[in-house]
Image (tube, rainbow, N blue to C red; front, side):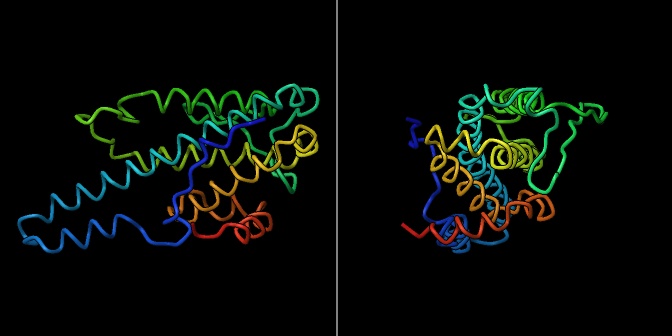
Length: 210
């Protein structure tokens, strides 16, 4: 049975109360001119740290499901990386070259890229002395977009196997994490996520504040 313990959706994400605003309120009591720059840097750091905290377990859980159903996702059964509505996703190499690849190859590229990224101290710092790069939000947006492509492929092509493996509740929980995360931080464009919009609405109705 797959563990759900790594799936974390903070209550404030459901309630809509952003903890960084509490930081803003307390900082406003200080002298504005003396602390404006420090406050902006502090707020940016907190937002980046929060993104880091939430994106890593999302990746780990999507990767776990993909590993479980990998025997059903082959170059023969899934020659294209597609989602609902025949949405196709080519892979873009480092220099922007577009390539048509099978779903398992695309997913392998995604997981390798994310794994390398989150273990790169210059991009995902874990030491207090290291700062988040100025491009950190862009990096997280790219990771979320790629993970969404994988989630959409799982729903479109492997949901039957996922149900047979009793993993459908886990997948729905992971998608709920993505939906609430994305709504709070606007990471993936609507034209990308619209293919699973009906499912997102249904899942949100079952998510209530803690």
